[in-house]
Length: 539
Image 1: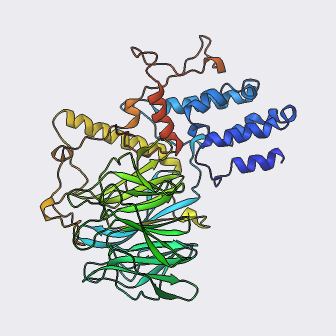
Image 2 (image 1 turned 60 degrees about the vertical axis):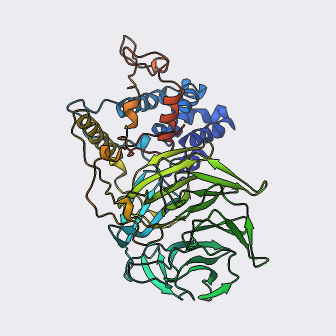
């Protein structure tokens, strides 16, 4: 492959990579195939890599110190520009006369290959028809003006086939639905297909082999163990064998050719049981019970294992999660979420599990966080624009019109981030002077909460301050990190040898250690330049 074609690949906004480190390593491998004739292109290739989005360790050790870079005079300005960007990123934002920031090309997020759609839900004492999409590269939620003309619904289920999102069952505050609506993400049009045999609110939905399964739920009178399967080719629903247990408020997903149904509520108690359906035998089979009872739970299949997260145990909303190992047939606990929640969205994107919105036992929330299995940690992401629970989330991959669903003003990401940090710093300063800011999260009277009721998430009570709720204010990540000044020689010229990150005056030399590097790495890994939340790890 010649340099023109190779550069076209690595510089493409649509190159699907979670980390820019991989792009640089691909450049090195390409040069290594013929170093004598190709190393002269290293500076040109560096302009195609988003150097400002690399992990600090990789940039410092594998880019700045690489022999190809050290031997290339044209590469030095690129290294300097990257250091200036990193330094400017962490300039104290209380300094006066700061110009508006523009995201430079070396830190411009690429376009995501997949987009999460969060559809419908319950908020403010009513069901919602709203749609938001999540751009993981920019860490932004985008409001999509394509509400279903048939009206809102909550406590429904969704499944994706191709570029179509099927919204199944649910509740609008008056009616329990058996209808199935379809959103075509390419045409941005809603349509209706054949209705189910049963009305199903609190329904679990999964897709397997091009078929959609509607599992359990509540018909307005009874908790259901019945299951039906939809064939898009024939536009028909077929009743299949029922589950062993009645389950509403459960969750279902597909793993290794089987459909797993987990947790839920049977009308009397929250469930810790789980079972799977095998289409080859047409039979439901129980598996080992979970470690916790979970109603309003969410589950996903991830890396060959079943992850079950959050929910309600009959007493409190849960932050706990567990995974089922099919080989050992045992459940193992994972790290707790930062936010307890039930009736929330759960989806996988960029090899991470995202928990979206929900109800925390006090209020409906918009919080979004993601789980990294390799390190067993939860990280905060940008909140949804709309506070809601009882939503349904799915990701759609390879959309030809993905630009319609992603964050548009990508050049403003740094400025937006700075504005958020400034607002957060001012809020923290006000708290320090006794002027507590008001929370944007509305709250309920927990005594009125009924985990079995579609109106459990009403959030029209007066707002409370964060301090009244006993919650800590989020600490912006850069406030916990040192400013990164560039050391220059006396002559004023910057060479590669002088480009080192220096500690602030009075700061211990070893302070920017592994923890700060880890936090910075995690933040930049997914190009998160807008989040004002601290990346937290629970002990």
